[in-house]
Amino acid sequence: MSKSDTSLKYLNTFSIAANAERIIIATNSEELVSAWQQAKDSFKPMLLLGEGSNVLFLEDFDGVVVQNRIKGISVTESETAWLLHVGAGENWHQLVCYTLEKGLPGLENLALIPGCAGSAPIQNIGAYGIELKSVCDYVDVLNLDTGATTRLSAAECQFGYRESIFKHAYKQGYAIVSVGLKLRKQWQPTLTYGDLTRLTPESVTPQQIFDSVCAMRRSKLPDPAITGNAGSFFKNPVVDAELVEQLRAHYPTIPAYPQPNGQIKLAAGWLVEQAGLKGLRIGGAAVHQQQALVLINQDNATGSDVLALAQHVRNRVADKFSVWLEPEVRFISAQGEINAVEALS
Image (tube, rainbow, N blue to C red):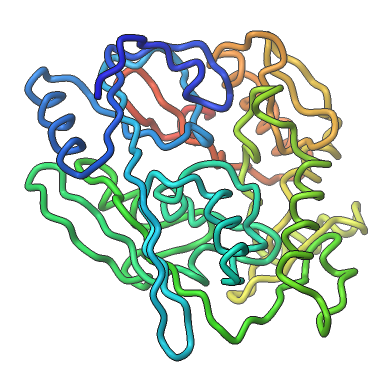
């Protein structure tokens, strides 16, 4: 279904005012393929959009925006796990709520993450000690040229920290149409971050974890319905242990999380805050006062305002800590997604 209104302002959580040449809502694979063929026939770029929760429009998009709204949730089970098949257009948080209502724990740490289920594998979404890769069974990918669907196992998705194969080999000409999740019946709580550490492992319930995660996110993160934002703007940087030791000499309380490969993950929000950037404003864009990792649309910001602010933040953090932050948010130009790091360099 094609929309007559071509404004993207209410299709991205940053609430950036931008337009597309055309907007199409696709509810099945056939409509996705048709939209792709129409874009190719008219020599126009096509952008697949979930709920616009992780994108920054730098300017008007000179092509077709397709909203993937393939719905449906089905549940089967094995001896050891519940198996969910989820349409790419399902809202992620509503999916988390659905699993808890059905007595299927395992997603509670990922509550209130904005966006659609189909976007979750692209970023390998994660929060409060859990990443999608720990519950993902498979991802179904549609070849928009042939109409054929391929099922990739979790291993084939090449998940990493905010990373997957969908940012590379399956970036152009493909669409995620469904996601398979495996929730183990022998549930174990993950209580390693924030207020979750105060909960009692022996008696805690999935609902208590869900409630705690929602409370933490709501206390720290601005509601996109009120203040435009895309959540965490930068990834938490992973650096060499040697650099962290050098930083500890000057900043003894620096949050640092050892990784399996010997490197150390730092807290990007802490770095931005320590650089004195909370509340900094450029044009209509600003660094959030409560959570420095979030850049906000404070007053009718343009994509250029947010870009300039992100550049300033990145440079200041690098000057102070010798750490270069990388955006988690996808940057969209007139012709499609561009390399965000290069855009900020």
